Length: 156
Image 1 (spheres, helix red, strand yellow):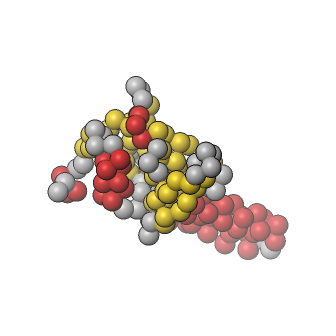
Image 2: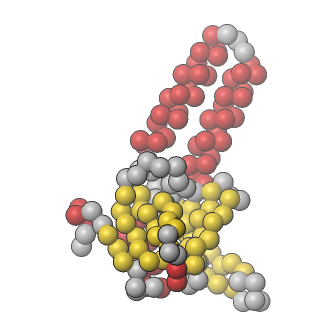
């Protein structure tokens, strides 16, 4: 569910933004849980308490990363946040195109059901908002010139 929040614009006023959480795909989450689960189970047999704690901590960090990714849209920018402190901001006026993708390239996206957002002359970033259609519609309301390329199943 998207969250509306107010952020300080830096000019004494506040800008209302909508936060779109990342979709968390089982195709990425299950392998992470399996790898760490197998490691934890094998460590139990050795009675290595430190090893178990370390593996749980690393697994927790991966899962927290997946669930912390979000995309905030204000009238000025798309801000991508990961792990609460890693932020990337793209001015919406610079966004030229959004293309549906399943590209597995490393990206702030916790699912393979992705959108590639093109901005500037040669830049792009891959994201995976939970509600892609609402996210795209929001960006198009702000900047109607954004071109959108969807796969057939999502075209309306």
